[in-house]
Length: 390
Image 1 (spheres, rainbow, N blue to C red):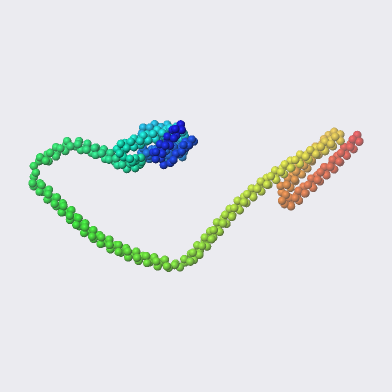
Image 2: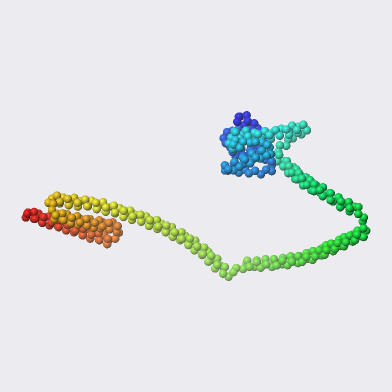
């Protein structure tokens, strides 16, 4: 789209009376809101009573708006618009809008020349001013159509009605029948007049009854209003006590709400502390297990090294093997007892009784180690004595 077309579009919109001042750079970037506003304003210039939706918040609503606008201009002005270019809302959309503005500008110029030829200097460019005349014209067109249909039906019935009318006109008049019909009409008129007079009398009676009822209601209203004023001035017997109890109940309710809030908060804090303690206990148990496993492995390795050293120092016999097996069994039992005592001491370190039990187990383990060393010395001495004898 060239600069000339942009300038032409802005000038044409200004001459048509657009309520905003369009700048030349309004369509350098996509501006869908401005394009939709211009389309809506142009559609109102063609049809002031048009009811087109202007919802453009979502892409679906924008597409629906553009499709409705394109259909409107095709039907009303026979102008074909490109929906894709209008949806771009940039310079490409200006070319499509020029199709509409050129038509309006041509109509405006032709009307101004026609008025100049007739001698009119004032140009009425506001089509909304003519909306009332357009509505009146439409109503008259609908009435003409209705009247034409009624006239067509009446003309179809004229063939049968003509015969009936001619027979009635040509028939001889009977004076007695005419007199009888006139008398019947007079009697009916007298009856209607009597009914009307009776209704007038009834109206006067009903008006009197209504006046009496109104006066009675007014007296009741005055009496009830006086009674109400006296009741407002008199206070009940237990009203003061009721107000005191109400204020006390209000204070108690506020205190109850505060306590419940505090209790719920403390319960939440207690649950959090319990969870933290549980995690701490689990961590301590895991650390104790790891510590026991490491101590068990180290002690087993040390005992095995001692046993191996004793084997190297003693000759290999069946009695030595038996001694080694016994030593291994006692070593493993002593290590398990020691580890069990250490685990119990780590897991139940909060009570003094558990500490005392751990001390007793340690003393038992030490005693068992002493027995083990004495038995080992006795057996080694017996082995040496046997070898000397041999």
